[in-house]
Length: 251
Image 1 (cartoon, one colour):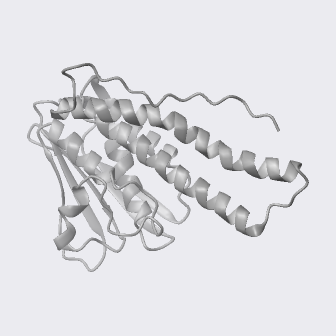
Image 2 (tube, rainbow, N blue to C red; image 1 turned 90 degrees about the vertical axis):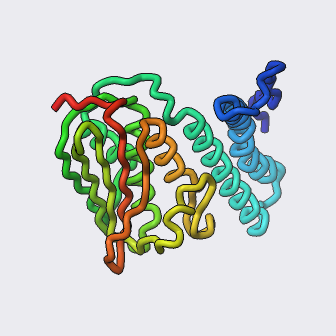
């Protein structure tokens, strides 16, 4: 069969004197490379299907082993595409480029809708504050990463996630708790490192950037992100503080 032309450039030009030797330069480099590579990844997602179609059109049958290999190629390519997407998100996080008054309730509703149906999971919230000043994309990323992480790493098909927010002086406090398997205290710092997972990616799909994103954003606002030991046998609780010097509550 005839396939459309796939265009993808892997040439990323970095101006002289702009090599990634500082944090901002490194983030820009990651952004450029990740964005460019995604074009090739999209092509790789299409090629296995085209190969199978060409085999069938030639009058041959796609053997089970070939079909299995094609499925495996697609799975790993999708995993790479997700990793590059998350790297792009990481390079943009915490820029505070669009500070505005954002409704926590509206953003929470949008994130839950985006995550999609979570059959068996209940996502509750308890907001002691209303709208506040923050980069809308940063708040979206915070909530999406924290809620998604709690659901993805749960060890059951049903469970509960709770999001709470309140003011402490001029600071915004945000916690996300769940009733999943929990995280041993010795791993409480490790899970915030980029590209880190405690389980094989064959068990739980993910790039290992979720909590790293959360900590980067919190740090950009002069705050922190940490895991809190609750003393319970199950469950995890992530606490995020965003300093009020960068946030102002309207209600």
